Image (cartoon, rainbow, N blue to C red; front, side):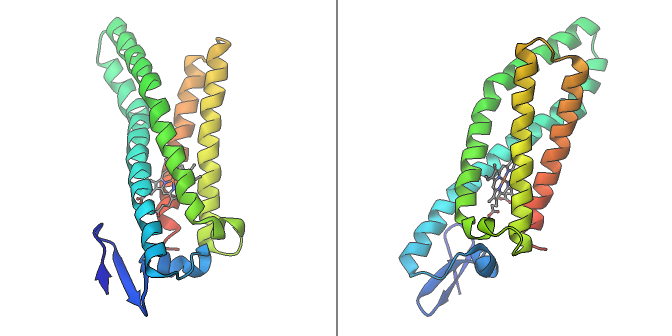
Length: 187
Ligand code: HEM
């Protein structure tokens, strides 16, 4: 048994080294044992993608949590005019930063998904493939929420009530996505 620099255990089996995450799912994900250098190169590409995806997910989910769970309460504790300005300033800053966070989140997600294309090609053949497919469908739905919000905003139809329900729906989506992202490796 060896441990790679990232701390993930790798097994040396007759000259074959595989990331430990790939091993239990090798049958499911289509990742096959390959000579040392190829698999190590693949694992090295996977780790930065995973880190980028995780950090962007933290930034995104954190922002949604602040918007849904904290901002309304903070606003109520402030004089009305200040609360309105605070919310508007938060929304403006989110509109500046979020496109970049989403770019990293979805691009890295696509890169990760490419490594699991074997399982994704047959989503009903394994629990892993099925849960990952549902996770990606939910992520696509989150993106749909953004497109809808932008369309409503452009037409002046993004009322406070609509924005409220969009935020709550996105929060439920990201909680389900996080659950699936972890459960797919354990169910
Ligand atoms: C709203 C968008 C998304 C959120 C909030 C999200 C969130 C997450 C989280 C929290 C993880 C667990 C990471 C870890 O444990 O280190 C994860 C893993 C993963 N995500 Fe996403 N994700 C999103 C979109 C996507 C998209 C669009 C794809 C692919 C097209 C994708 C593919 C993956 C894959 C393959 C993994 C497994 C990585 C691994 O643990 O080895 N994700 N995602």
